[in-house]
Image (cartoon, rainbow, N blue to C red; front, side):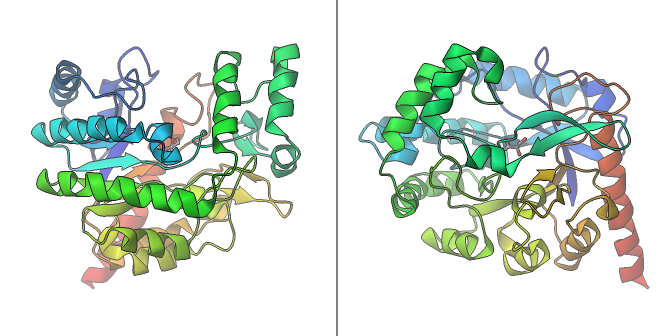
Length: 355
Ligand code: DNO
């Protein structure tokens, strides 16, 4: 297991590379060019600049998260081909600087979704929280109208500057079914995976978070059965999964340990974090420790050890501790604690395997 840490770039992250350097065992910075819009080709000078900065701080740049997929590709519009060509050229350029894994997702309109970014926990820390009933009761068009009247009603991802854009996107997705999305994903994979293979880059799709449909939008990367189907859509070692225990773990039906065992050779990248689920479907992102949430993190790390996992892992979102001001979920302290927990489990598994 190779350990990585997500970093949003100088001026765009509250955590410094020099701080990450002091967390034991981190070799890889998980990075992206966050200022390049989805669908555009990444400029080589920016890739080089990032590489030089990260390598000078003592890390490698093996994992990119994410190269985002333009909505026209997910919608299967005729304009998708232009964006797919840009995507391929970005893969080629990342291949030139030695990138090994590219993480991406295929979620319509929204990436991860929460209702509260700073929900207070019993111990005074705060964490990302999802209130199911609140989301289920939303008619997206209605919410857009309400936010227009009162901008205080906005939710993460619904910022006023995105609103006009959001309405037309919701319109565009009307009538798009899960089967359409599968077909559009297959088209995309058939185009990009051969390019990734030529450059020895493993593409690793991220599960939908939460792993169920929201606002009537189709979502397909949600379950073990759907990941099985995904891997067969384009059967290649370069077509893989970012197995995110926290995203999938929000649904109690998902057995992450079983997924690790079944998809063992198709997981180039692991996101490891816990969530505490409530009976009404709400969930909160608890500490990485097994006992603090509903996901069996100890069992997950053991399963990775059992399959001889040599891919990349990173701790995922953390709580906000000790008054830290940071990007929601991406502070220094709880992710550093998470790494030490993961190493503890891993090292103990190594020891007991040697006996
Ligand atoms: C949240 C992340 C996701 C992930 C993308 C991958 O913090 O796990 O945003 O990076 O879905 O494309």
